[in-house]
Image (cartoon, rainbow, N blue to C red; front, side, top):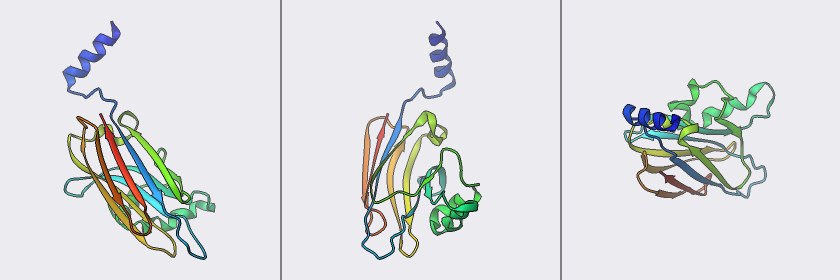
Length: 170
């Protein structure tokens, strides 16, 4: 009986009862240099006009004393200008340690991320990586939210990012 009221209330308010999710695979390539530093990486959602919509994850050096790892977050320039400089880091559910070379998979469920606040429309998932003594790279993967069917997008960086794959599920 309680379940029936919940569904009726959800339908009456126009709130989607969705289990939608984003599955993201990000490859951090191994770069043959004498002194390798793992990249600082930010992942966020932009609207169709490239304005900022939501942060998903930020990987940076969390282990430095006195939060000194935040000093180089501004090297992730596009993310820094759109959102990073307004954040207090580390941020719960957003901050994570830098990642070693290899493929990393992230899953963002609509119910446990800022995705549940996105109005219906066209978006891009943006991944930006910057490395000390290295370069900087940005890839964009378009998607529609909320998804009506399974969507996929792929991109490939040239230096700081390898293959980046997005799958959006209803």
